[in-house]
Image (cartoon, rainbow, N blue to C red; front, top):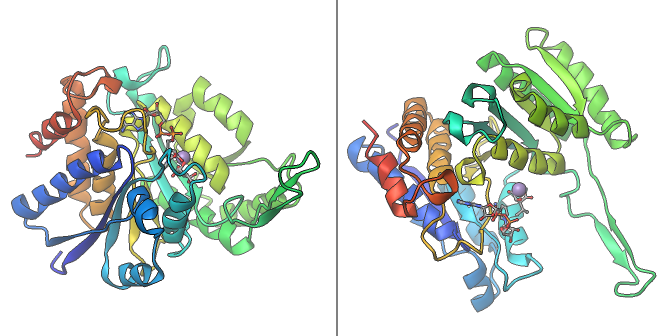
Amino acid sequence: MNEPLRIAVIPGDGIGPEVVREGVRLLEWYRTRRRLPIELWHLDLGAERWLREGVGLPDALRAEIATSASAILLGALGDPRIPGHEHARAILFGLRTGFDLYAQIRPARALADRLVPLVGKASHDVDFVVFREGTEGLYAGIGGQLRRGTPDEVAIEEDVNTRRGVERILRAAFEYARAERRRLCMADKSNALRHAHDLWQRVFASVRAEYPDVPSEHLYVDALCHELVRDPARFSVIVTNNLFGDIVSDLCAALAGGLGVAPSATVHPGGAFPGLFEPVHGSAPALAGRGIANPIATLRTVGLLLQWLGDAEAHAEIERACAAAIEAGECTPDLGGALTTEAAASAVLARLS
Ligand code: NAD
Ligand code: IPM
Ligand code: MN
């Protein structure tokens, strides 16, 4: 890594700034201790800016990010003062769909036995990677309301599924499963959704035929949720659409220790755009300002960021350090510890060799 790695940092709202501060500390550790050519570019975007200036994600800034950033580190967006979530959609979807970041990769691997909430299951039973389609489905923003606010109101949200969009997320998941020698499960609801998910079925059949070496299966998403809890060890790579992926990734996170430890990478494999790296969790308004938010989801997210930029060893090392800190009980209250956000991050930093 000789090229400067310019990382745009968007702390966002609620606990976002508290956990991103620790993620930045980890990036700075790699800059000073490992001499990674990291350059941090702090961006003031989020609820405060929206309330102050009405600014979400300006087009000019998005264009500048596209051309000059290697990656984006984002905390979370969501503020009770903006109940319509306008700023969050403008920024989050402006980055995700604006950069065509179609693969939301959400690993959920339990770092310690005691983090697995299922009786009789251990950490080796919980090791999933969810591939969530990130640009279409019910998130496409197509729809409308009729006779709003009246008893005869109608609200429509269109579910957009394109052959290209379905094929590329399936292919990304199969490529990953092949490279990592993992099993794959595709989840849809084709028994009920006869147009859109019939497309998923047909594209799955044709892409799957190209990967005979990857053990693969299909489940309806309701059955997947049931089986994930009943027999988690059956699952490894899970690929699904945007909405189901949102829900399934929170379920997988819960099985691996909760949202406090769940990282995510939102990327366009093979594309030139910067990837977006964010914990799976939101702004957790009830925790904000109390100094007890778990920083591990963000630290692991920084691990995914460094891995995406080519440093697989940094990723492995961060995972090991997080596991060791949790094993020692040096963690925040959500994991049964008593440390603050900052102290929990320090416990991880201290374990980097
Ligand atoms: P949330 O993820 O903020 O919180 C859900 C639960 O998980 C809460 O009990 C919370 O205390 C806990 N939790 C979350 N992060 C934690 C952490 N780091 N450490 C310890 N506990 C943690 O989800 P929500 O309550 O549904 O949403 C709150 C706001 O965040 C909403 O405005 C929502 O739209 C937004 N949100 C944003 C993103 C994002 O920006 N990527 C993701 C999810 C939710
Ligand atoms: C996530 C979040 C977002 C999503 C919300 C805040 C729009 O839940 O990143 O998982 O649904 O994608
Ligand atoms: Mn979510």
